[in-house]
Length: 473
Image (cartoon, rainbow, N blue to C red; front, top):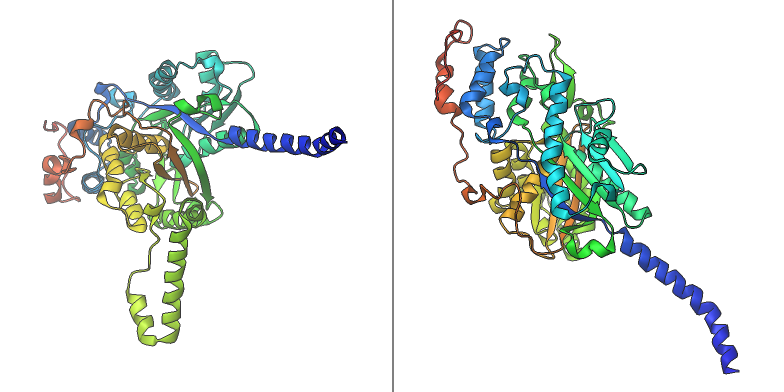
């Protein structure tokens, strides 16, 4: 009778055990880890010094003194230093007539510099890559750049390839999201994500102020990373993706048009940055935070914030004096530091960093990685957040269990954010290794005003720079 009972109950327990095991195994394989990443370090002879930047500006015959004054004001307040990098064709003096070969060369230099080192350091062979995602917004080739990488590294015939263009500065988190979704449905995935931007074919040579700003902000750079959901590689992983939220305001006309690649009235191609861009970014950021905040913050902080808001509204309802005082007072803020240890912000410019810091109530320590990255490398588009992350790592800030909130903005208009968990204490051997001792720098002023401040004294309608003018050292 006992044997019969055992067999009878086994009919129910075995399927239940199998179901629980499948559930556990599926959840275990759904985790998405960053195994390693590598940021590009262009050669020293590609640095855009103050002197050389002045020479580039003077070479643009579309510009006059008033445009020089505008650019001087923009670059002085940009937060960008003298050690950022530009594409080769600018140093060859061909920014007014770039070729497709220039754009491809720029990408090849990036691929070889980063992907080679990444494979070497991880010990992973290109044939072991199951998924390749490439996001480079402003260049489209035939075959695609992703196919170029497949050919360069002789990857497998069954590799799954995704080539993203036109996604702007927030594209790298779009790529991460693609890998995350694949990891949810497939076991033992190893994915290579490659993120950069092409400046060679998009260097603006006109005089539209909303378009020439891009020349002041965008710089050469890129990042390659390997992501995986292999449980056997968990102990080697640097980060685990906790959650990711994407917000897209492309349906709003003013958001859609605030940042776009276009031709000016003279036919010069460039990136237009509209005056309403900060407003569009703020709206997208606010909507993104509404979704991701409940996913990353402790319940106690959400309840505290809700209670403060309710109390504030009740006071306004009961008392006119309280309503007037509440209207004059600052709105209550949710404390993101209760669920986040580090903030990895897109280096879209000094104003972008200041705006995010103000909205989240961040300290100078919190935004130091973004400010220093902007100063050292400029805005490297979609790869900028990985330079910021590398700064934190190089400063040995990232310890096991820490949570990193990554925020990026891009054309569309998009705001994408995610939360990473640090899997182990990180040593900081990366692109910052040879210069990290010089940072943080207290004085981020660049020498442009000192060298070119005399332009403010000139009459924009009558003065022109002499043809034999030499930019001072």
